[in-house]
Length: 100
Image (cartoon, rainbow, N blue to C red):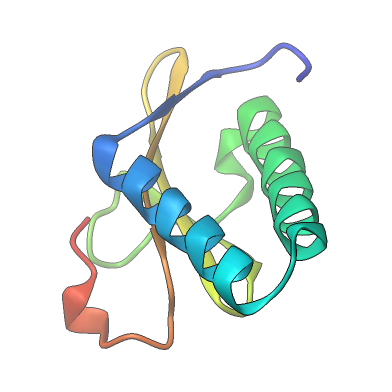
């Protein structure tokens, strides 16, 4: 990853990621997991380099939203030198379940 903001994951975001990977392995193959992880890495690099690239959420103004796939949205917040990944959320779920 190129230099930029440091990426920090919340426990919730780590659990979300693990659930996504488990689901992909259960329903698909390692190839889909690899593709998802590569896409996620590229997006995190982009966010690290330019954290203001994606729009702020209406719910919390300091949290931004990046659509990774049609089934995964990354919610993150920025501090002085750190990007904190808050959650990975499936937009097909009830939006009231989103806790950011």
